[in-house]
Length: 279
DNA sequence: CTCGTCCCCTGGGAGC
DNA sequence: TGCTCCCAGGGGACGA
Image (cartoon, rainbow, N blue to C red; front, side):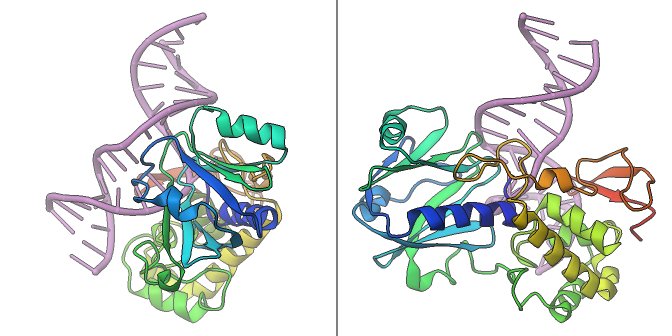
């Protein structure tokens, strides 16, 4: 599910709802997700206040009023849902909702539930002062909506690679937060063939960088894409899935030239593109 | 190093 | 209706 626009949508919902919320308890319904919860996870969080919720790449970072931050990843199917009403909250906290793996309760009576059927998600705690060097973030490339993701940077990064440009865009070390949907969408906007070797696509770096930024901004403005699992923290769906130009549209007509859209496999993932518009 | 392949896990949809 | 197969937004561990 969640690429940068979806994670950013969740971040905004969490940040707005949980600023200054004080954690009362943390219930773990199992010992691990993609990785084990660290020892003392719940204990380190109880009584702490959430200051801000930030995002780096596809990770959410909850800054606490201690030295710690919670790091969370939605994997493919993770959801954060806020139970707003005390009654709903108590029910949520007590519930054994299928795949509700973590339940935070707050002093104000609300609850935050992390639900993740596939359990590719992750939740851990780390020192705020050492986040940039944390194993999960070291080696992560620039944020695509910040200045570091410049045409010059992308040109140099692509020039060093041999693999297809679409695979390169999905590499979190090259640029943070772009996944399978938005890599296809961005290359369509840029008019670049996803099969093109990265070093040859380097000449189009400015167009590609601009397209990545454009599609991510559009998707954030639409509240992300809900194909199956993705929901806002309120439970609402995003609606950018209705705006896909190529993703999931195999055999349908290209929005620009009306030729048929093709589906190929790259690195085990589906890629959608227009052979006429993308060279 | 970089690249491709496989795997983790559950659920939903297509096809028979 | 029910079974089997395939596929899914991510990422990390392998081996070549």
